Image (cartoon, rainbow, N blue to C red; front, side):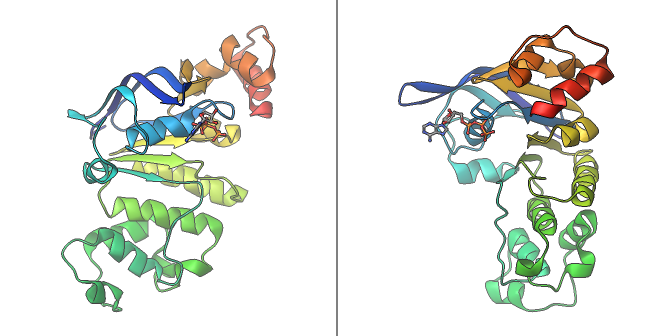
Length: 260
Ligand SMILES: Nc1ncnc2c1ncn2[C@@H]1O[C@H](COP(=O)(O)OP(=O)(O)OP(=O)(O)O)[C@@H](O)[C@H]1O
């Protein structure tokens, strides 16, 4: 494991008197692949918004030894923190390579970036390889499959050397094969970065999470490994609307998974 971790203490976000995030503590270690799960309205997206500077928050958020709260969005991005949204935001008319080139940006003028070039910068070549998009590099992003657009967006964070990736439902709308490929991609990129995934897909979470935080009504309800949170009666109650007796992990896992 290497890189920086995310430390959140007593995080609070209030909208006109409604508390959407209500005293959240998180310790996400470097190299973790943390899934944030929870019912609709639990505060998952608002928490990520607070970490990335999109909403005002109270408490403390640190990435490595740097404080994030109170900093503007672009400064937080420059500190190596990047996110994706549920809908991929790529330049549809530009090729995969051009999208990555623009994201990598630094020091080159727009025409240099838009020209088809023989020499691909090393970080761009690496991102193409990591995301499995090398063979599609000259295709316009607009013709990519849904999953490939999500991978391109992740690639656009990789070329910026983002150290903390916050991904909002990255596999929503994906086929089974795309989900598997995305899980493998997240496992690869999280070995030397910190990755946080907001997710509703419990099968995906079970297959790929290294750790899980369950949010409910703005608070952390449960935290631990997949087996631990699935065996937690509080979690079962939130997902199933009733308390069940804890069962051996595999049987319980199925019960919790169905309702998410
Ligand atoms: N800008 C806003 N103004 C007022 N209320 C908001 C705002 N953003 C979010 N909320 C409210 O805060 C609560 C948490 O919303 P949030 O989107 O963070 O939940 P979530 O866990 O991400 O849900 P979902 O899984 O449905 O995306 C919800 O009740 C939502 O209506």
